[in-house]
Amino acid sequence: MINFDFKPASYFNGTGPNTLICKLSYPESQWGEEISIYANALDGAYYYEAVDFYGNDIKLNPEKSPHELSLQELIFLIETMDVDPKTAQGNIQLTLSGIPLAESILYPDLEAYFLEKRKTFGMI
Image (cartoon, rainbow, N blue to C red):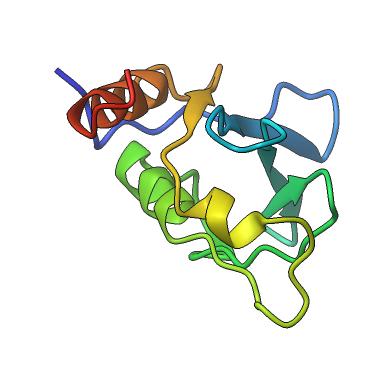
């Protein structure tokens, strides 16, 4: 059973002001797109950033939070990622419409959630 209320105790292990929250890969994409989501600590808040190969400005919701995200909040952030079509590089809009494979050390159930979703839509 997936615990959607799960929150990691901390994003950081003392090695720096930012950390990789999760890595998303889209195997159906022509080039096997990947997006990495990072948390950055600044002024008592966490700011979130999504980075892809093309340097797209990926909009996240939420952009920041005062606490670590629950699994449910992270899933919402991933599933609502968006880009401005006028500035989009590559085929990011099509990529974002897919269902990713997810990896995360901080959120152990994230991978299972997206694997189940891919099964439901016949992608596995």
